[in-house]
Length: 89
Image 1 (spheres, rainbow, N blue to C red):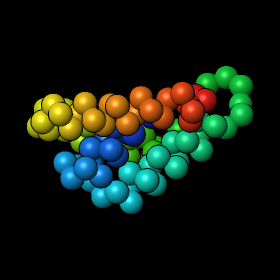
Image 2 (image 1 turned 45 degrees about the vertical axis):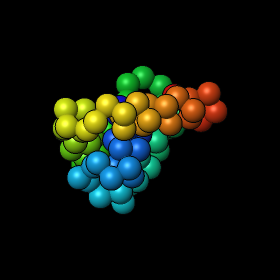
Image 3 (image 1 turned 45 degrees about the horizontal axis):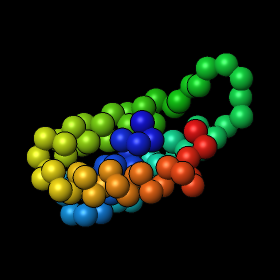
Image 4 (image 1 turned 135 degrees about the vertical axis):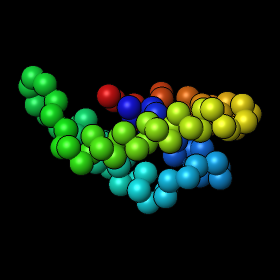
C-alpha cells in the first residue's frame, strides 16, 4: 500500500493525477503513523483510512491504464531511490 501511495503521489505531482496532493499527503501521514505503531499481533486501520486507501488504489489503477509509460518509469525510479534510505516497513 505504501508503494502504491507513493507512486500515485509521484505521478500526481508530475501532473497526471486527479487527486489533490494535500489529500495524498494526509493519507500518507495516517498510513505511516499506523505502520510505525509498535504493537503485537494484527494491524487494525480506521475505517476512514481504509476508505481513503481505496480511493488511492482506484486512482493508481486509472493512472496505470492512462498515463504514458515514460512517466510511470520515472515515478518508479523515484520510488527506487527512496527504498534504500527511507524504507523501514
